[in-house]
Image 1: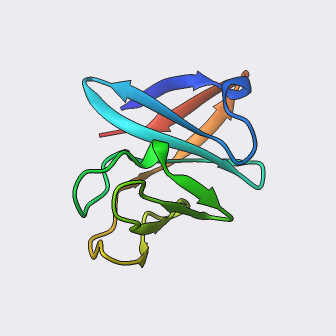
Image 2: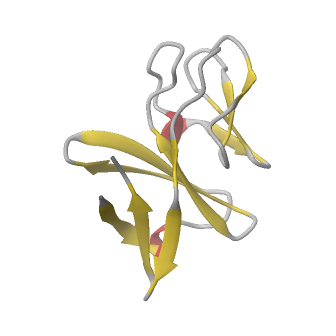
Image 3: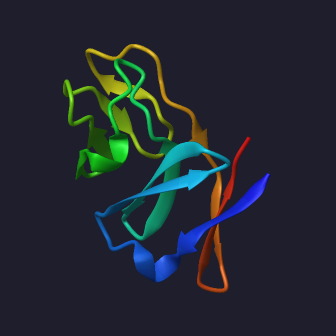
Length: 101
């Protein structure tokens, strides 16, 4: 399902945004001019990734410090061992569109 998850101007460089679509939370990140979308729940203990610290292409979960690549959802630092799902994003007409399940 293609979902409108916000305006391009709502997300600043290096920033994050929490969005909900069909009662499921997603985290948006803007890094190096590109926007990325991940499931918002850390796979370690469900910490909110949209409240994490972003450094380069890595977001750190605010609960226990698990680290994920915002481009792919892959784990780059424990304690999490399972990647988070990532979703394709496109910007059209100033709107952010994500391909969500």
